[in-house]
Length: 335
Image 1 (cartoon, one colour):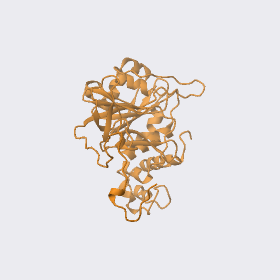
Image 2 (cartoon, rainbow, N blue to C red):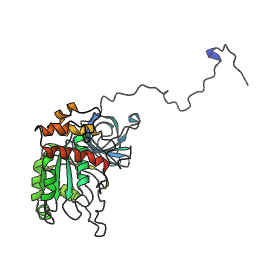
Image 3 (spheres, rainbow, N blue to C red):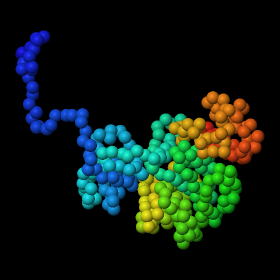
Image 4 (cartoon, rainbow, N blue to C red):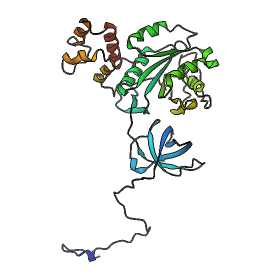
């Protein structure tokens, strides 16, 4: 066996031939200047459906993306077979910068964030007035997530033929959240869809809500060409059955906007939310925080907002609403 000394020459080092004949590895990545831009419509077990021009193309993440996630609503750059024909597969090589990101965690003590949708500009929070009963704490949590992500919230109340919306609307009146009230008859004849569609024009709207509230039924009414499976409410538990298993982006008729139907949620954790950012959704209260102690939670005895409201700069009901939303991080949805 040959042994090399301290002063070996390059010619003394054996080099094994590359039997496969492939090119040596390099850190230089291709720029993919010929990539086409697409919109992510849905993600299912690693297969990503993108809309490129007028074609639905199935793609997968390229290796150079690493662990970077691709979610519904993302604008991506795609290369490869873009014909959209059966059994073809393209590659996503870049994810464009996101304008907004709606996140949630499984619970408040779960540090793992889940991105719900990207690039939406409105969040429609769908809740039933009965069957199942409304869950105000879940609505509050969705509002906090919307404010944190920079999305405009829209409250959609369904099944008003079973219960009055007055009490629920009164509790959210001081927040100034726009709302639409619908009933099952209006869903059947399309009247509800027409009124909701007016609020969606020219926007990308994500629909969230727990199972059984009629969220997917409403989306089916908004986009009749694409029917998704719907379920029913369990008479024993009062909970709906999960029928939507993955988020799906759908275009409204006449290109008037987009709706993103998301799976029903039973919890909406806010571990990722910095409470100090929630105040930005209250422009009438924000100036009053200038005299607050450092790291003020805005719900403590020395908070300057109490004096700000006492001096008549804002409605006391607005301060109550702010503190109610901030407190949602300390309460579970069912409380």
